[in-house]
Image 1 (tube, rainbow, N blue to C red):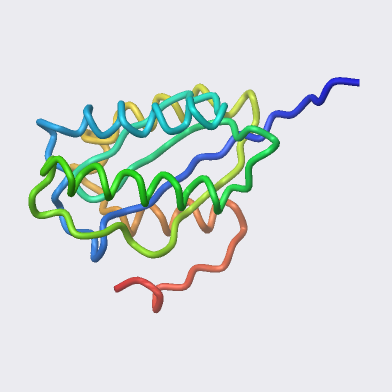
Image 2: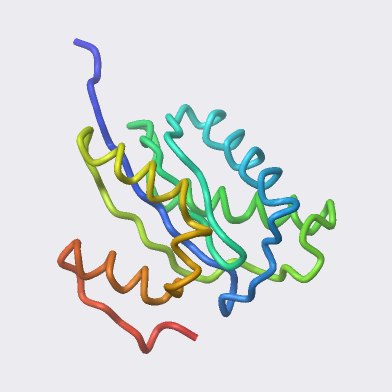
Length: 148
């Protein structure tokens, strides 16, 4: 019998101390780089986006992958690429943790639109406020003391 899965995650992570270094002029290059990582790991990317201090990735996870391993791979490879190519000169590191929230088929279209409109959305809301709302919406406990 074949394996059937639909393991879709909305992944969110930011720059260390939420430093605003992911400048718009090169952000699409970063998105393309991360898209390549996901493709190489047999993930289905639905949308990637973000602003100066954080990224959103909506992707289905291949059943052979562990989420933590994939995120570690993305962060490590993207950091090496950013630093190796001088893409964002002031970039140092990604934050230590991440948010990863599951969704279903019906939840994808609104999340795709949400990720697509990040710049507009963050004219009035901070990344911390956004992450807090996501954590609460998924019934998880918020730990503000873990944010630098």
